Image 1 (cartoon, one colour):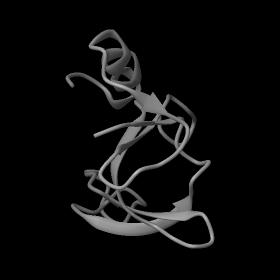
Image 2: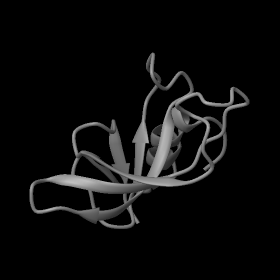
Image 3: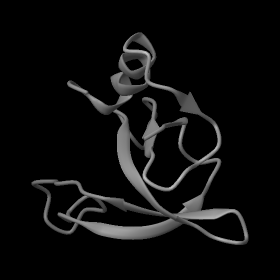
Image 4: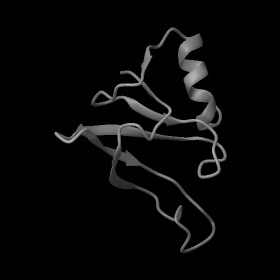
Length: 89
């Protein structure tokens, strides 16, 4: 995939890569544009928890030291409903 993260879902569909609203380990969690993610966002699904939440790994960068996007790599647990879709492995 190339370009901004919000474009990845369309690119996957155009390339015949399956997408789903259900997470799978190894899938790309993909977010469309929003106020929180102006260019979208992507992460990797690392684990699906028994309560339905998912553990993702992600990276980002912000030149604004101390901002919520000032990190290179992290993992976090989120609701499986948070991403717009999952691009399947």
